[in-house]
Amino acid sequence: MKTAIFLGAGASAAEGAPIQSNLFRDYFNLVNRRSGQYFPEHERELATFFQLMFDIDVDHDNLDNVVFPTFEEALGVLDLADIKNESFKDFPNINFAANSGRIKFLRVYLVFLMADIIHESLKSSKDIHRQLINKLNSLNQIDDTIFLTTNYDILCDNALLDLYSLDPPKKVDYGVDFVNYKEGTFVRPDLDSIKFFKLHGSLNWLYCPTCNNLRITPYEKGVYNIMTNPSESFCKNCENMYSPIIIPPTFYKDLSKIFLSMVWNRAESELLDVEHLIFCGYSFPDADIHIKYLIKRIQKNRKQPYKLKITVINNHPGKKPDVNAEEKNRYIRFLGRQVDYTDYSFEDFANDPNIVMK
Ligand SMILES: [Zn+2]
Image (cartoon, rainbow, N blue to C red; front, side, top):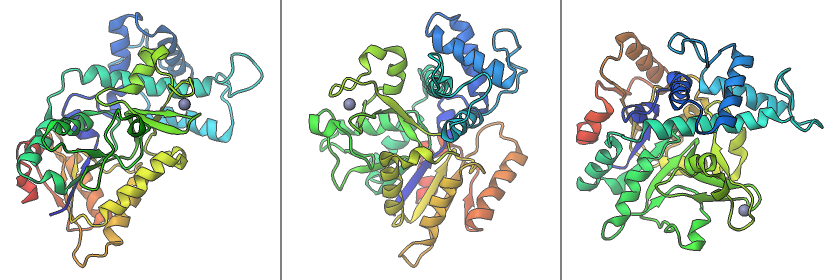
């Protein structure tokens, strides 16, 4: 049965990534532990941003009691100011003053922050993604499986890239062309490749705004390297600096960039023939209206006479019953009563995919 596995933030959290609501707290705790030795300039600017915009003093407040904005909220105010070409009193947009443009810098710094905390927290992951992919491979189901994710980390990427060492190798198709294909530094996928669509971008994608192309940095978080090793993060062709492709869920503006549009179009067309869609670690948040729209389209625009089977796997130890009930309600009200909302965790599924795939 042709199946799609949708990996949400909960799948990465099961491996040790911070959950969204703890992202900023975990980051500033990390910065305090490192005591400013690493990237002082952008760390200081981020501290100032939280002080001036959200009245949070990350140096002196007790971080355990502070309520931080969400990543989407913090990035959202900067993105909207940038789109509307407006300023905040303390954060001017680009103007004739030499030190202007803080809004644009802060947007990049927030992406660095996210790359930094993901890098630190997943240094010792539990390899659940790898286990899932190896199981699917040994069950001969990997060729009938499509992967989709809203996560920026490269847990699933690394597990899939391991399959290149098989004989014959299994290749990965991200639904987008990389400049690496021409250079021969990453194998061009064919029709049999495993499809993997990263709907919000990825930490291993680097965009060159001059050459207008995309580079993949296999097994490496290229975006993290822009921060830690900027002198090595230049496009070899035009010698300009790479930019990340990372978009927060609520903001569609970067999707106008051709590469992410291609990913979304390919994802939609591939998902139309899928018979079973399995959500893993995804809470179906209200903010993700673009994801909901995509899922609705593939649920309702199908050619096949049969309905799309939908399974949800998002339990974890200590999850509160009322959180579960609300989440189940969110799925059912949007996708219908046939949604199978299970009690399984991502680990259960990775241990034995057949608990829901048989
Ligand atoms: Zn370039």
